[in-house]
Length: 344
Image 1 (cartoon, rainbow, N blue to C red):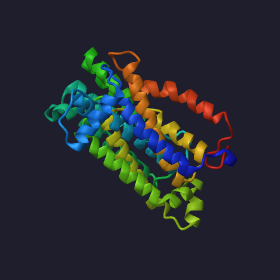
Image 2: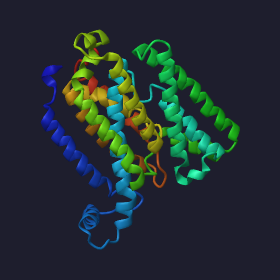
Image 3: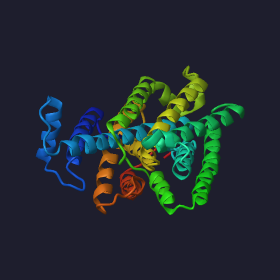
C-alpha cells in the first residue's frame, strides 16, 4: 500500500508533540484528580527552581517518573520488537521470543516466593528479574551457537523451548510457596506495571533505549538487508554472523532491563512495529522512530486507563494492551494489504 503511507517527518512531528502533551495530561489522572493548570505549574516550578506548591510531591515524585517510565518502556519494547522481527525474519516475533521474559519471571518469582535477594530491599524483584533475563538470554545464545550459529530457526526454536521450560519452573516455585499473596504478586508482575517507577530506576532503561535506537538507526541499511534475507545481506557486503550477534546481545540486554523495571508487558513489541510498517513502510530509517514514538504514547495511555478503570485498584498493563491493541491493529490491517519479508 505504498500510495497510502503517511509522510515520515510530519508524522514524526505529530507523534513527538503527542508524546509531550500526553505526558503532561497523564499527570492529571490518578486516585486524586489534579487540574491540568496545576500540573503545569508544579512542573514549571520545579524546572525554574520556584518554591514547591501543593501538588509538587504527587506530580513530580510520583506521577512524572511513572509517566516517563511508561514512555520509555513502550518505546523500548517497540524498538526491540522491530529488531527481533528483523533478527529472526518472523512476523510473530516479539521482544520476549528468546525466553528472556520467562527467565525474568523465574528470577522475579524466586525473589518474591523465597526472599533470596532480600538484601536488595525494594530492588530485590527487579534484580532477580534482571539476573533471570540475562541468564536465559545467555543460555539461548550458547545453545544456538553450539548448534552452528545464530540462525533465525535456531534462535526461534531455542527461545520457544527454553521459554516453555522456564515458565514451568516459575509456576513450580509459586506452587511450592503455598502463599496466595505471593502468587498474586507474581501474577501481577508477570502481566506488567510501571507503578514502581522512580527517578532512580528511570535513567538506566532510558539510556539503553536511546543508545540501542541510535545504534540501530546508524546501521539501518544493514538491517534492511538482513530483513530481506541472509543471502541478500551477504551479497551486499554485510557480515551477517557479526550483525546477528551484535543485534542479539543488544536486544537481550535492553529487554532484560525493561522486564526488570516493568514486568512482562506483552503485545506492545509484537504489534506496534507492524502498525508502524503499515503507516510508513518497512525501511528501518523510518520504521524505528515511528515505532518508538508510537509505542511510548500507546503504553502511556494504557497506563492511564489501567489506573482509572477500576479505581482504587490497578489493572495489569498486559491485560489492557491486549484488549485495546488487538482490535486496533486488526482495524489498521483491514484497511489495506500488508507485507512482511516479501509476503503479503
